[in-house]
Image (tube, rainbow, N blue to C red; front, side, top):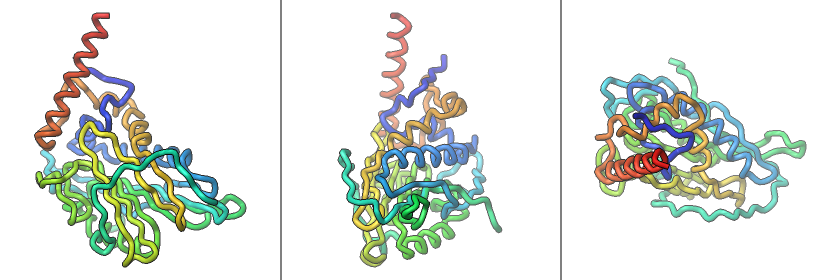
Amino acid sequence: MPIHSEKNLYAGVNPHLNSFLQNPTRRWGNFHTQHISDLVRTLDMQLPPGYASAAEESLQIRQITFAEPFSPTQASSSKADVLIYGSSSSGSISSPLAPSSPVAELSLVESETEDESLPSVIIYRLDEAGLPDTPVTRVEVLSPANKPGGSHYSQYRRKRLESLKSGLNLVEIDYLHQTRPILPTLPSYADDEAGAFPFWVIVSDPHPAFEDGQALVYGASVDMELPRIRLPLAGDDEIIFDLHIAYNQTCVSSRMFRQAIDYAQLPVRFDLYSDEDQARIRERIAIIAQNVGLSNEA
């Protein structure tokens, strides 16, 4: 009997949904669009006065053409991500949240046909009238075509570099465990390399200049909470952004997603998870089944 829930029953990224989205169903675009909206709403609740976020055209290109069966090296094409705006009167910022510890810190130099454009999130500083003025931070949710092996990887890397050299902070959220990381310096989970994580968040701050900038790299495993990241704004302003809140909203935001998550079954392409993560998934499924059984007996 299928087991569905109105909540995400994993501590972090839901592997049932994540595998469903990356494989022949080709539903990554649906998730991407919804997640951008949830990121904007969550950011607006956490941003200090003087800043606002909006969904706008991203650095990515959308055109997903998976082979069947899916191969981790065969991914193709992009969508809107999040920009954050802010005003000169934003003032000092304090946050009650403690940030997660990044797993790496890199120099930005090291990190380094018209298809439909994907959305991203842009954070702006607001002017004195409270209207969007200067973009300060871009938040991208990476799509298969823009990862290594995808048809638009080279184009994305070029635009990424141009954006960072323009002085715009960049946050890249990578839930795509079946493809290699966007930065070649990071170990690849898809290739079973030591030290790799299935899920990455890269926060790049090109200040005071690109050559001096740093990238904080956060990693998360299956059934592990997504990180609370240091999200840079204008100047010395920053917030601690809890990505987990936005993800959980998106995970169960539609009936299609909830129906795709069947806790009575293993995720599709279960073999593409590491042995350790396979064990975590089996353990979580067993706990859920036990709780369902106890509930039925009550």
